[in-house]
Each structure stands twice: as structure tokens, then as C-alpha cells.
Length: 309
Image (cartoon, rainbow, N blue to C red; front, top):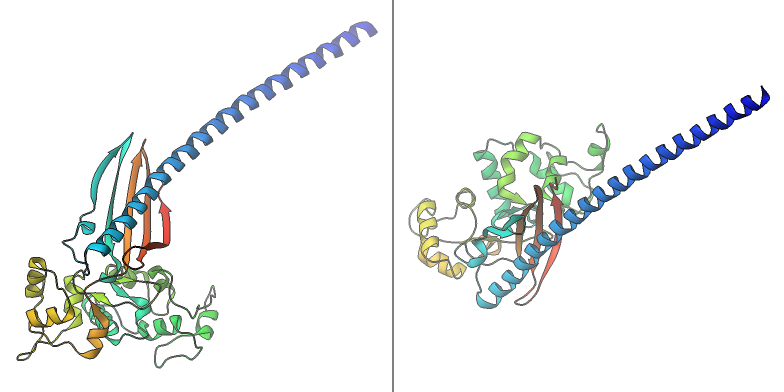
């Protein structure tokens, strides 16, 4: 009886060992498959990232080449054409370069009354309240004094639920505007096509800005009353880009004030490079802000990746 009991216990132990071994083997196989899938996923991600960074380098080199060959920047130049769709193994890539100085620079508003007036005009056009502009200036200035009548400093933001702090520095991204007092989601979406946040105050490029923004500038004519006609401005620019502010005044019979001369230009330093890589049913998007540093240099101010699926 005792011997049979010992044999039964030995059999149970053997079965337990076999079961543990089977579970362990299954786990090892499963982990190996998981690690293999993760490796493939990481490899795909790195491959897409490499293609995206290649697009970024292409944009930088293209802008450097343009700076050596031209003193102006306009929509008829090669950089503005973009890459419609270039086939690669298992997919395709595309990209475009946009003049970042064709939008109102939120970080210019402290020192540029022309861009501030244009922003107010666009607010009226889009039926957005202009009351947030004082708070916007408080957001980016260095002092802690609240502007009258609609400004906001630390005491306002710290009382919110949840509370947060205003940085008192230039905006890093236009999306920060959503945090400013008086700016809701609807207002932000209406203004988004016309605004950007660049690292420093910058002029607007007459050769690349949009028609609505040009209309918001309200540039006066030399002769008679009224302002420069937007249709004529666009037609003239498409025929031949403006080579200087003086060229713009002469051809458009315009009268630029001293403030407007400081706020406007015919060339740019900052450009937004956007790229998309599609490969093996996966997509990676790239956004990069490029600063052109002189005639032969450039640097990436920031970059972001998104939508790898």
C-alpha cells in the first residue's frame, strides 16, 4: 500500500513537471513571437523615421541653395512646389515647404503694431473677439504687470481649475494660444490658418502671405482714398515677385508707413517643412521648423513626428 502511494506521488510529480515544462515552453514561444513582432515594429518605425529625416535634410539643402541663388522668397520658386509623391520600396513619400513668415507671428505682437492691427482685422473677419490680445501680450512679456483692460497674469491663471502658470516668455508653438485667457477652441480654429509662433519677432513676407492677410494689412494707396486692391496685388505678384519694398510701392502705387516698412519684407528666414512617409500600411508624418542662417547654412528649430500606425 505504501509502495503504491509512493508511486502515485511520483506520478503526480512527473505530471506536474511535464505541465510546468509545457507552460514554460509555451511562454517562451509566445515571448519570442512578441519580441519578434516588436523588433519588426521598431524596424519599421526606424525605417520611416529615416525617410522622414531625409525629407527634412532635403528641405534644408533646398533652402540653402535658394538663398545662394536669390535674395527674395516667393511662391514661384522651386522650394514652394513641393514633392507630390515619390515612390519608395513598399510605399511613397511626399512633402512640402511653406514660408513660415507668411503668417502672423504671435511673438511679434509686443513690438509690431502692424501685425497686431492685422490680427484684429482678421478677428473681425472671422467673428472672433479681440479681447484676448492684451492677455496674449501678458503671456509673452517678461513683466508681471497686468495690461488694462483685458490682460491676465499669474493671479488669473493660478485661480483656474486646474490652475497653471503663464510662462512670461515667447510662445514655443501657436497651440499655446488655447491656454490664453479669452481663447476657446472655436476661436483658435478660426485663427489657426493665419498664425504661427516663431522664436523671435519677424516681418511678414509680401511675396507669400495670403489674400485675407494682405487685406487685413490695409495698405494705403498713394493717390486718392482707399487701399491697395487685393486682386491687383495678387495678379501683380504672380506675374513678377516684388524685389523690394520700394518695388512694391512703385508698382502698386502704395504708401508704406515707417511701421509698415519694419513689419514687411520680400524674403524670409523661417520655413515649415512638412513630410509624409507611407510604407507597408504604416504612416509617419514630420513637421519641422527650419531657420535659414545666412546664404549657406540652416538649422532645425524644432521637429515633431506623428501618426505612426
